Image 1 (cartoon, rainbow, N blue to C red):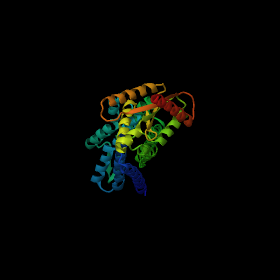
Image 2: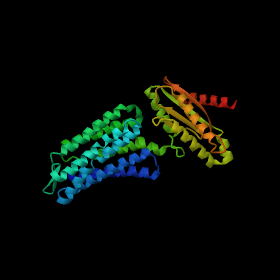
Image 3: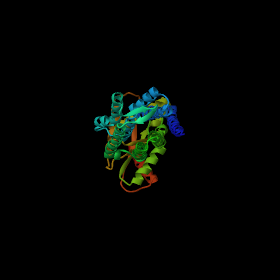
Image 4: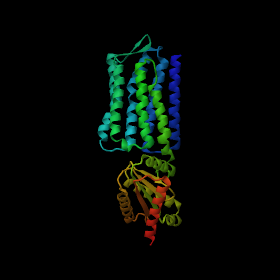
Amino acid sequence: MEILNVVDINLFASAMVLLVLGAILKEKILSKDLFYFKVVILTTLLVLIISTISWIIDGKNVGFNYIISWMLIFFNGIPLTAWFFYLDYKARKESGIKLRKIIFMFPMVSLMILAIFQLYSGNVFKIVNYTYVRGPLVYLAALSMFLSFFVFLVYINRYRKHLMGRMANVVIIFSIIPIIMGFIQVILYGVNLLWPSMSLVVLYSFLYVEYGEILKDSLTGFLSRDQLEQHLKYKIRLGKPFSIIMIDMDEFKYINDTYGHDEGDKALRTFAAIIKHEVKTIDSICRYGGDEFIILLETEEDVSNKVVNRIRQSVNSYNDKDIKPYKLRFSEGHLFIESRKSLAQILSEVDEEMYRDKKRRKS
């Protein structure tokens, strides 16, 4: 009966993870964010399947039981390493990435070494009377995973400011649930909690973070209007200074009317690529309307004018190449928000700044 309960939990967790994977594959979105998340899903699913098989065959076949138990140790660190890489990528911190990669590989490499050592010593586990029995070194495997969690949390805490809103919540849940469940599983022999709990973290991450990738603007890959407004509300609640830039392409209607809507889409994508190149990865870019963009700068210093100047220089450089028979031009408004204002106030004020700039350019 206990085995059936464990298998049922694992199957339910696997089905949950497969549904998330199916939802992502259905959209056919090729972003790095979703690539890393798919690796997390697939590696978590792999360990769940191996764990399920190990419970089913325990007490039945010595050889098969040994092979599956060995595989469980060998592959057990891979999902954790995948999670570390995924969350590190979401933090978008480039400096020190080589050292972090080496550290994040530790749970995977240490458990693989332990699995190889098992082949020669048999001290990680034994098959006694057809049944899996823990060996003394199994606690070393658990210790390596807990140690990896601790080191990861120390590193992620050093650049927590790069993690915004819901992503920060994912890190908190990832930090609490698996550690508690893993500890219980080590203490209470026969309990199966760690990887089913990780499937819950997968589901939470999808619903509250990665589903946003699916909702992004399909033409530019930028945040949708709703996503930007939600993030703005979060920034307002924080009460910390930030900058906002609104950009509107000039003469976009002329490009559409003269060269067609396909060319208009190409112009939008080109313009979006220039913006993306000149904005840091931790900042948020939104396609707010047809040819309107909003940039939310996470820094607490007023650097909006510098960012606008970089974008303008890049646009001018593009125009100088005469790649197209038309020129890309834009008007902009930017604000540095130091005091608490409502979402409507901020958007109204930056919109007014942008239209003032547009009038200046027409006159």
